[in-house]
Length: 125
Image (cartoon, rainbow, N blue to C red):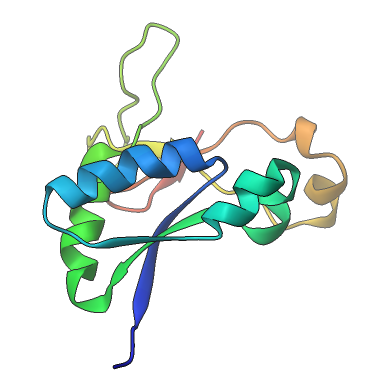
């Protein structure tokens, strides 16, 4: 029997992945944590191998993505309120990936923080 898995998310530490795994299992979704023991043995390699991957069977992919989107932490302003997307007025906003230019690869601390809406994909400052 072939096991096809889909990676829902990756976590820097096993503890974060275990919390999410418990929630997924309580919702009836079978979970596999790839590279869990590797990171437990040597946490310094977590970034090098892409962290602990939370994986589910392909048939549970849509349910798992929906559950993960409900549970993930979204960005908040200094007052603790969720940031609102200017395009769709949704409050599911994450930090956007850095730009892929040589300048920002060499000096990432000069890049201003950018946000990305998990609902419509809008990137804004």
